[in-house]
Image (cartoon, rainbow, N blue to C red):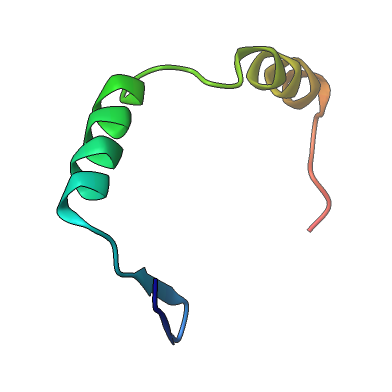
Length: 54
């Protein structure tokens, strides 16, 4: 596997089979909340803050 770094983009060459598998995994995760507890906690914290320091 070769990696090419260009500014902030990293390109990893992989096989067609690996790309298909990654696409399947991505499609199965699309639209799902992966960190539900952390999101709820962050919402509660942000709701209690009246102003954020700049």
